[in-house]
Structures are given as structure tokens and as C-alpha cells.
Image (cartoon, rainbow, N blue to C red; front, side, top):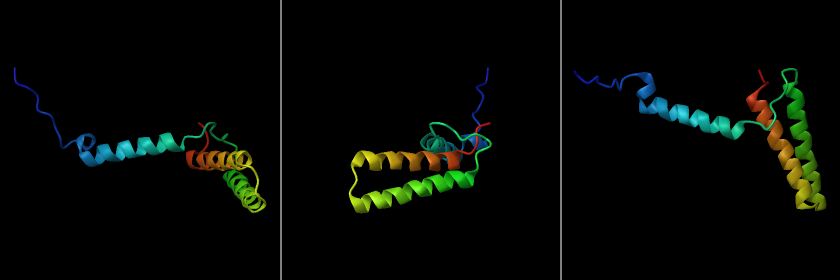
Length: 90
């Protein structure tokens, strides 16, 4: 019985396609929010919340707040940006 030859010309077998799929997977893993936005969530509102948190950080930096307080705002910004990128849940 003859061995079936592998078709390396198929799009899924090409190194560029493989690298693109791996890159997309890594990006999705990094960007996935802890809680996706509800489908009714306004993306402008999410952005405004992130910008508000950035403004709070600027104020805290100038006043000299604790790192815990700054970390909380950074976490808020990170989650809002992830939700914007991820989009609404299905």
C-alpha cells in the first residue's frame, strides 16, 4: 500500500498561516477579559471609564497616593481596555 504524501501547499500547513494562527491565539489569551462586556454595553462608556481611571492615576501620582490604590486603578483600566478589544459576549 502506497503512503499518502502530505500536502504542504495546503493553507493550514504553510508556516506563515501557522505563525498567524499562533499569534492570534496568543493575542486572544492576553486580551481576554475576566468578564466580557454585556452585549448592551456601550463601548464609549467603557472607554470613558478607562479614561476616568487614567485621570485618577494622574491625580494620585501628583499627590503621592499608595501603590495599592494606584494598582486598583491600573486593574480597572486593564479590564476596560480588554473588554473594548474583546467585544460583547455572544
